[in-house]
Image (cartoon, rainbow, N blue to C red; front, side, top):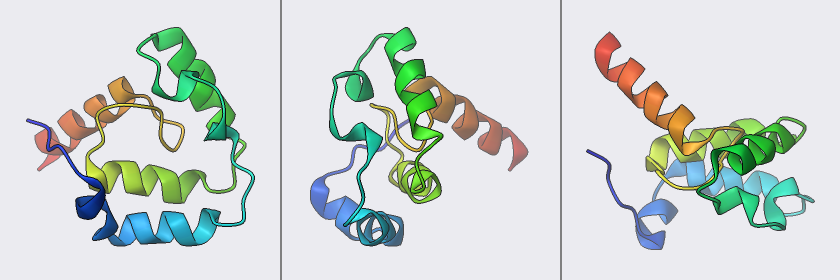
Length: 93
C-alpha cells in the first residue's frame, strides 16, 4: 500500500532537502511541459528519457524513492518503474 505524503512530510525527508539544495540554481528539464505528470505511459517514458541527461537525476530519484511517490516522473523513473522497484525490494527483504 502506498503512503500519501504532504508537503510537510516531504520537508522532513533528508532526500527532499538534498534535492532542493542541489537543484536550487539549476535549469531542470522537468520545469515545463505536461508529460512529467501525464497518465500516458508514452509521455512518461519521454519525460523519463529527458531526465537521464539531468545532473540532478540521482537526488531526484532518491527523493522519489524516500517519499514513495506514486505519480509523476521523478529521477528518470515512471510510476510503473517505481512500483516494480518497490515490489522487487519487498521480495528481496
